[in-house]
Image (cartoon, rainbow, N blue to C red):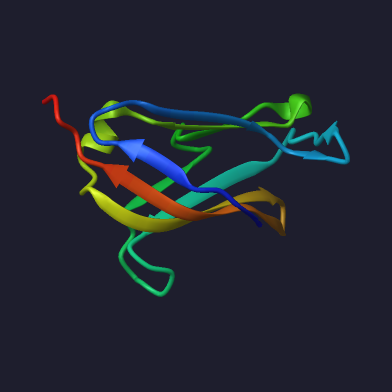
Length: 112
């Protein structure tokens, strides 16, 4: 997977829109699903955040190849400030593609 650091602020809506393309051609994600987990460490059994296409935390843009990650302000407010790890996977039937992975940093909210 590509390495990408995500920075989230407690109490703020987090939205990232990316396009999965190969050699400049957007990939058709029609019929695919996606899932993403955030954990304190790679080997941790604790799941800090768990989102996917069924709960609306991830939206796929079909033929446009877009992947939108959306975490509500309420959900980010519930996260403890600190550094975590995540990965984002795309699923087509039994085929799983690890698209992104890296650090997931939660910055503390000042205005509450």
